[in-house]
Length: 201
Image (tube, rainbow, N blue to C red; front, top):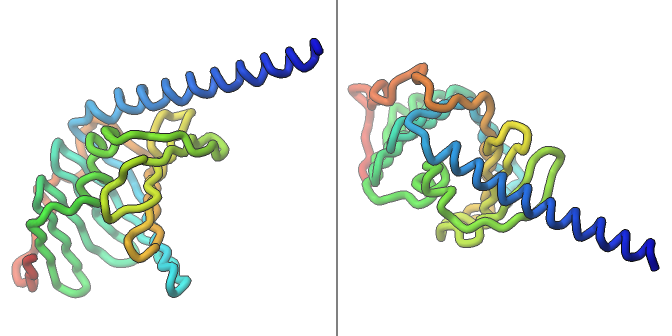
């Protein structure tokens, strides 16, 4: 009887500690990411196209300055994605083409602006090594199974993953994150070159 009681107490203590840890983790994360003026990180984006069983990997640098975000892809091809308020610009160097979308893109707007991402409701999903994985309870319409992976040691969002409307899985891994430091490039450097074919939506 004593052994059973001790076991239950230990289990109860573990559960309480887990909830305390995860609650503190989210609060610390918000304190860090919601006070950003600038942010820079290396990223790896993996797109898994489920219907064809094909995986595509891209690499680059993620920049954030106030309300403007940039994803500068440097491999395998050069391109950049620039989001500011409701204006989304995508430039593809190899195709000499740019797409300007004036309709607010919910995935870009929510996933890449931390203030919007962290204002969602979370549910603890599971622990993977030193990463605490949380599911976003009410993601935007075009994203399903939206999760953030929080590093308990560095108090950073290391991975953002979701599925799109075609059940393709998109994973963005952030490395070498730099908070509130001068950017290595200014967001104003990312302009569409002259002579680019522009498509407006």
